[in-house]
Amino acid sequence: MDTRTQPARLRIDRLREQMDAHGFDAVLLPSSDPHLSEYLPGHWRAREWFSGFTGSMATLVVTTERAALFADSRYWVQAEAELAGSGVELVKVGAPAAPGHVEWIAATLKRGRTLAVDGAVLGLAAAQTLKGAMDAAGIALRTDADPLAGAWPERPALPVAPVVEHRAPHATEPRAAKLARLRAAMAERGASHHLVSTLDDLAWLLNLRGADVDYNPVFLGHALVGPQDVRLFVGAGKVDATLAAALAADGVRVEPYEQARAALAALPAEAVLLLDPKRVTLALREALPDAVRVVEAVNPSTLFKSRKSAAEAAFVREAMARDGAAMCAFYAWFEQALGRETVTELTVAERLSAERARQPGYVSLSFPVIAGYAANGALPHYRATPEAHATISTPQGVAADSLLLIDSGAQYLGGTTDVTRVWPIGTPSAAMKRDVTLVLKGTIALSRARFPRGTPGPMLDALARAPLWAESLDFGHGTGHGVGYFLNVHEGPQPISKAVVAPEMAMETGMVTSVEPGLYRPGRWGVRIENLVLAVEAPADEFGDFLAFETLTLCPIDTRTLELARLRDDERRWLNAYHATVRERLLPLVTGAARDWLLARTEPL
Image (tube, rainbow, N blue to C red; front, side, top):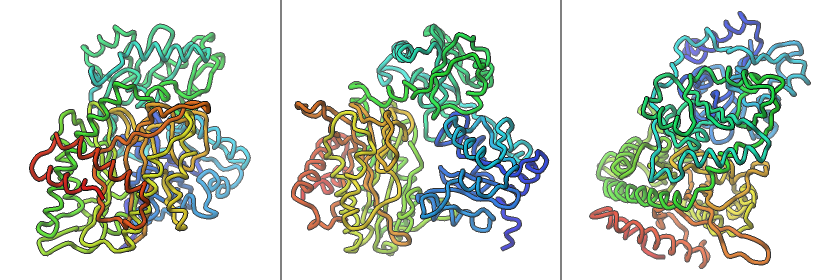
């Protein structure tokens, strides 16, 4: 193969031509947009376009002579395959002695050279770190121009999907009440104005939803909240007259999307603006007049939306039951089809998604189905494609004795789901059973946790890892992430991971978080068992308020994959009690083969 014609090579060559024309010695392409989103509309998938790497998180740096992609361990195998022949080198973030992209740039570029990055997609906090490092290295930083101009003629246009209202009863708090709460929080900080740029914060605050980002029911926009009014900046034609009138009744005025910077530039000198440096870009910050005082703090809406109300929690439980019923129907079909029909990873995604789509209140998937059979299950963010996928079964039997990992979820009007299970294909080996059991022990340990209210999420991480650590095993991703309410499947502020602890990560009543320890054997199989849990009040004592977790997800855990001798009596009791709850909650919603499957898979140990 002549790699000189590989698409990424040709695209990077075109980028270098533009770099030379503008006097840039290097260009930084983060996985980001003007809203610092995790999942991006096509218009801002520059890192993917120029490198060929399709994973959701990575950073690309292109110099006049080298190109490097920085990705963590979740993506190493995928990145190595997708970067082959591109001329882009993979830097394994987290590997021993591997630099981050900031350190790499400082070490690679000579003093006096120029690094360009679009300030419109560079987070303010990240920009502060980058500028400090570049100043120390004697490298000029240009953030006032789009380095992709002229290098990406095929760039997709901005999305045009309409903005819609999230209505009662699923929207359990009126927009006016949310704005009143926000303004009270602004007053506590001494702020007259507040900028909201992150899309899930914006959607939550105004009880609006959209379809500008795949799998996330959000829309592109910014909001400038003042003492009496809100200026909502969205694309032309995205808000119809009826919705605009409803927004106006709550003091929300719709203005063109591209006018957000001008509105910030026109703030009066006496204004005090509250903004979150982790959720606002450099370009928006630089638009402010020098006289405007800035208060940096976490978006109040980030904290508000993470704490689901009792009414929201009730709708989430209903969504979980509908999701569980869909999975029963799918898995009943799947088990009878094994060894009798041709079933591929693509088939799994299609059939499971179709069952979810039949459920009341279903809107969309919450992320692409991950169905990883055998070695593919060892890739935490694997996604089967028509060009590359595994066959699990044919009419002649299963392809091989192994494990199938399925990570999937959906968006419902009353909640967002995310669940991972591992299923035996053929007869699982003793080694496979050992791995599944160790991971399950971690899931149980964290699910049963009781802890003081306000405990930072990262402090709980070791509970899920301890059974694996005891065997000198570990996994490279976080143990848990926040989950939105008919919003992004990943939300803050309470990660359960090895993250550096910050005050806003405190676990509070009403937070929905995933519990998903894993174990991955490259080239062989992968294991992850994921439930969503709700932080609820536990009995208090003289030592203060305590919290516990209520498991929300309703899907059996396959006991055929377990080495039962490794489970303690209390762990068996937890599993039996969980399966009893799954059976009780789902039986009224399933019939026929799905009911039979549910009964079989929830038999007590």
